[in-house]
Length: 503
Image: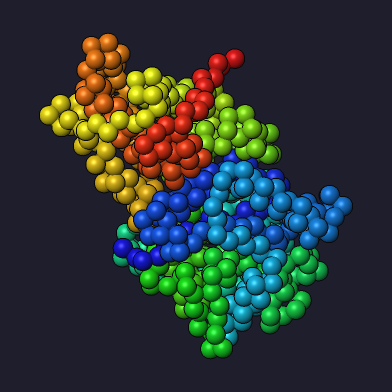
């Protein structure tokens, strides 16, 4: 295991307000960062997110808003930072591609690759998709529609600069084959390998003429051009945490052989991260990340959420309606990370009432009530009677927590949040079943104080273990549980999750 852990989200494009997909990636990354801090220590984990602020769509959105591009992005970035604060995202850094530290780094990187002979000038003629900011060759376009977003493409002919992506195709295919787990889930790794085997990579256009697009980082070797968005955006992962020396060698505290590096993304940008990005790093003499994980989409009625479809849901609205931790829990619990999921308020309410109100909330509140009623608010110092098969099973469940969670949340894990939460809930449900079977009210009536003390000890042990295990997922809920279960006494508050009546 590496001594340090560096996790990134994509930098989010700020041509519009943040949506559920943005929050999904950030919540997942935050959960992994919090878990790794608990195992490696605060100083050994770095979590980066940020915003992608250049490109044609930004220029167009700014023009429509009657603002300069910088004024426009400054306004939208506030929304992203505000949402991350509301969701309790614990990022160590927030990078913007308009910041000087990034723009200067990108220019240096371009200079290095250009001097090494991996960038050349050529004339391009073909189809261009403005929303995707992507060029397409003739055979990829059907009915003048973008193969990715299905919106109309434009015919463009112009001189541009190209990065020799094709030069490294063989290296990348071999690298992926020899590094199982480089791309996750496994189905995505197979998808990328299949793409590389069936297609010849086209060299990547990395520029736009200033006369067509002025909003971007000027090329250091030709001031009449600005940098194409992907060669600008992807670089943020290294520009935020390192620098080049005078000889063009990169050094970083967080991108090195002693650090496990994870790029967390949505599956729609898999090719850019699994093909362009490692090749760009290879050309710069920098090691690839250890893992690129592409999660699925949240759908609405089996269609991908998007503003153009009119089915986008605001994360702020969901948090205001259900609370931060409920929203976080639903996104991480309802669907295995990597697969697509269907989003609805009914699904949130169902998950809330079943898991949070009936299971976790009920266990916490009924235990507090019993400690208050039977022991005047003092937590009894009972013992776990391992001769009782039910208690033994619960004790085994508690001791197995780490072994169940680490394969899912550990640095080289599967990032299966749903599976980790399922294990925690199986422990909570065992404790609730134990209450129903033991009937502690009868123990109290019969003055079986020792048995009652031992019974409460079991419940408190489950609650404390659950609180610790849930902290990366639902840190505010975990804090509320800690506040109510002090070392020797309780401080009973309101129920954590009052039931919601589904109207």
